[in-house]
Length: 220
Image (tube, rainbow, N blue to C red; front, side):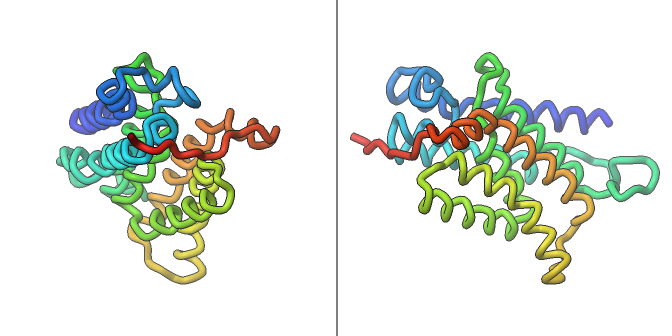
């Protein structure tokens, strides 16, 4: 179990890399958390620094999650996570643990006073490495909601909420054999819930009608 602990720590540390804070400091010499919405994530970077740096931060934050599940999780050397046979005797559970650790690192980064982003890009990045088709469909929903509503927060919430249902529909209605489905679904529900929870303030603002719509600042 020692190498599993190492995976959790390494994944958390990778997730903790404060991409938006680093980029904002290098580009403009500012703390991104003191500008825009105050969130240390890609969406706020897009608002404050422009689309080029916003997309850069989103891509890097996504890659943190993908790296954790495709590379760091490989440190685990045992054939199974548990000694006795269970539904969790599946390498996918190690990948999920690595992915969740990365998301937690992004949200509560040790390198920036435990005040990071909301974990959407990192969560989608790690899930993309495991349930690729389902996440791509969630991405499509995300971009559609952004296009229609101009609310990135609403799109993030709906995309996170829809992901488990996409899996359920594909597996049980369209009879697609999703590898490690019974292992993955509970964890994906958990990570979707975490992402939605981090948007609790946005949900209040959406209900009250004072959530800010996306306005992209042009790069100079």
